[in-house]
Image 1 (spheres, rainbow, N blue to C red):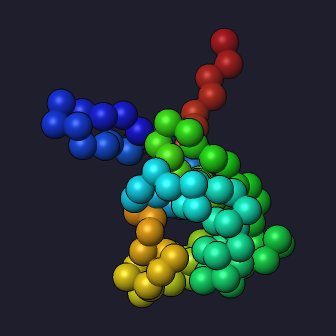
Image 2 (image 1 turned 120 degrees about the vertical axis):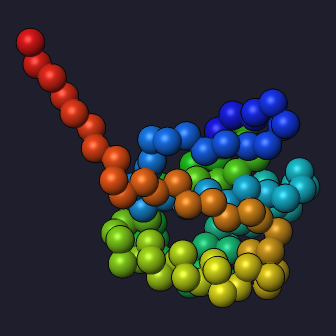
Amino acid sequence: MTEGAGHERTIPRVGLRCTIRFQARAAEERLTARTGFCRSVIMGQLGLTVENVRCIQWNQQEKAFDVTLMDLNIFNRVAETCVKEAGVSPLSDYRVVNLDRPNFRVVTVHM
């Protein structure tokens, strides 16, 4: 993500399959601590297990956790939960952004 002229954030066109970004609305330690985020949001509110998550990566520049899920069914379930419970804490402390771009294709050319 980069900041534009009006300081709004833009999402890159290249997507990460089955990935959701949880961006902290405030730069508080309780929101940016990995263990707290995993316990309260990932396992607590979203009900995910270790088998459901492929990767959780802290993005320092964006003050966000990028969570890649194992498959599209889990991704869709989590996306629906995020929409339904957007105003419920602790999920309400994060701005949720879909990084998945399903029509993105990588083309490799060998010469």
